[in-house]
Each structure stands twice: as C-alpha cells, then as structure tokens.
Amino acid sequence: MLRPLPDLPWVSAFPELNLRLYVEVAGKPGIWFISLDATNPLAVWAARRAFHLPYFCARMKVDRVGERIDYASERRSSDHRVAFRGAYWPTGSPFEAKAGTIEHFLTERYCLYTQRGDGAVVRASVHHPPWPLQPACARIDENTIASAQGIDLEGAPDLLHFSRKLDVVVWPLEAVSGAPSSSHRSLPRVMLLPRTGGARNANCQE
Image 1 (tube, rainbow, N blue to C red):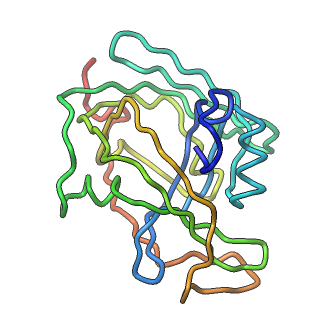
Image 2: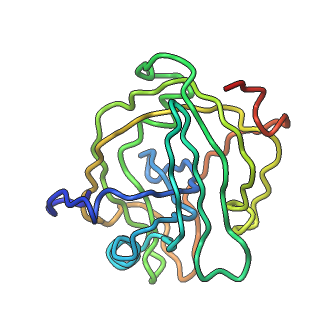
C-alpha cells in the first residue's frame, strides 16, 4: 500500500512474486528488487512509473489445500519462459525473529532502493510490524525467475519461512545522500547469501 492512498483491494491485494537482493546504501540496509511479477496491470504500471521498479505482468494462480499453498506464475510478453511452479507449507509455530539472526537480517528491513532513469539511487521507506514467521518446507517443480536475469539457482533453498499475512505501507521515494549516481544501472553494496545443493523438495514431507 502506498501512502497516502486508501487500501483498495484491487490495487493493494494481488498475487506477487519477487526476486531480491539485500543491499546497504549510505549505512542503511534495505532491499533491491531484481524483478517483480504480478497479476494486476494497474499496479504494475503504477509501480514502474512511480517507483521505477522492475514489475512485469504475469498469469498467476494461488490455491490453498489445507496448510499447503500451490503457487504458479508465468510472465506475459517475455522472449523466454519466465515461470515458477511449486508448493509450500508451514511446519511449525509462528515466531518473531531476534536481532542478530539470519531471519532478522532477511525480514526486518524497512526501505527499498531503486534507480531512476538518470542513474540516481533513490529510497522508499517501508513500514510493517515484525514478520510472524513459521519454519516451512517447499516443493519446487519449476523456477526460471532468476535465470531470466542471468542468475543460476541450483538445488534446494538453504532456508525457508512461511508467513500468512503482513500489512506493509510504502512511502514516496526520496533522494539518498551519499549514494552513487551514474548514467548506467549500478547496484549498491550487495550482500549475497550462500546456497548449497540438495533435493528439489528440500527433504520435506507433506
């Protein structure tokens, strides 16, 4: 939800799938979105125009079968198939991430960064309560979201979490003092997490 717009179901509630990096600019940690797929054409248009975010229109289907969520996404108007098919489900009770843990590092970030057409890095503040996380398992049948960006992901995810719902408020973009500025697309300081090989279902049992 973008402040000061009202919370409209057809604008602020729709399926979305994103690929992100964890970055730091001028000492402030945040998120850098590599791509975002969504079903709502209006939201895609608005996010591209107002936030300079790499949103794409996609056909998406989300079904709930007991505790399991079946998820399917395929990007529209792409030269190559950009898709995700799989399922995920919680395996434990909700908890709140503690400072200093990897869960806190991944979820407690309160801004997003992007880059305008002139190369300037800008920031939007994000407000949300702490994530109600649950340990999770997943079955991944297809995932070409990252390969569309030239990133190769192999094996099972190292870490999985489930969260049923989180209300998020995003504030307008602002200039970032001390951030790099150039005529070409450049990333802020990027923090990458290691991955290991493994079964595609991460040894999970439904």
